[in-house]
Length: 458
Image 1 (cartoon, rainbow, N blue to C red):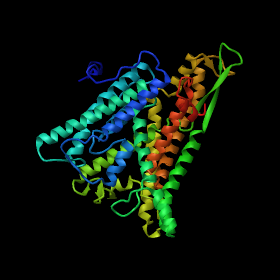
Image 2: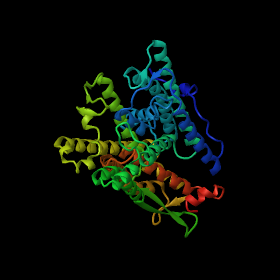
Image 3: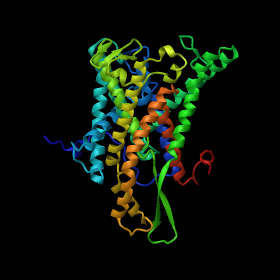
Image 4: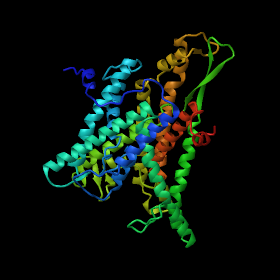
């Protein structure tokens, strides 16, 4: 049975594209409005749930999926990214033969992505409630009502993502991840409160307090996450500036030209987002099959941390860097766990990077068409799209492989350092903020607010 997605698309909720390019301030306003709505909804509690203590498993999923459990934003960007992963694998492996280098192919991909995202909103809501990830008060009616609320919250996220991508800057997926991780970094650094376990929530205050009382080892424990966060930040900013520059010249204007930069991280943070979402779904499946504490994929402790099985070896050892100061916790099993996690991150990021260039219009043929459309050519070659494509073919596939592999390795390393907001979270946030900075720099800033121009160095 063949499904005509164009007929279904008419009934899907959507946000219309603007008929003309919006001014900078208007786009910035819509980005801010979407972010404000996201934050407000993340503090609206779902009716009919029972408050449960947050486990480490839930905290990790919240950070990586821009979610907040127990609120209307419980699902976060999970359904959108899960649908994207499924389509990436199906289209990239040619199981579904869509030519996404053409506009009609990309439109079909986007329509199916939205349809599957809505389906996954419902399926994820059912999974969260039935597995106990979300505690639901007794009663069938209450259970159904909670599922409806969770599904509607997920659909709202889909619409907010469309508002950002069509009327604002960047994408809602990236924006919500950065907002969630950024807030956790600020809280984890500067919060003056003390946890029920007697530890300072804000690492800075814990570091200062222990230095003042002369407890240097405890001060080091508080300082390492801050130092790790700064280290990851500097590594990502440095790597973001590595690129291959292709010289271009206008075919009709002699003496005028520009360069077309192909960054080392050619597919940016997309492979990490998809891999992180895949891991979150694997963890969810592990919790579903575990029932109590053990299942097919492995076992969990009471805090939700994996202790054995496949799920254990596909999770990052917490604070591996800190283990060097406590040799008794640094075991062969932890080293093996670190190696399997690193290999999984690197391999998945590389695969998603390759698939992404073929489904998002970033392949050599699509980029060559963009260059030709703006009337440019490579100096020393005649003006021919095929020639431009052959030159780009030397670099783009290699950058997709190498960039995806390196960003996966960097994400794994960041997780081992114990950086605030999780290593993968801080990696994604820095890349997202840097991409926003570059996008703003490309805009005409004459009409922007003076404060924005000052921040961007204009």
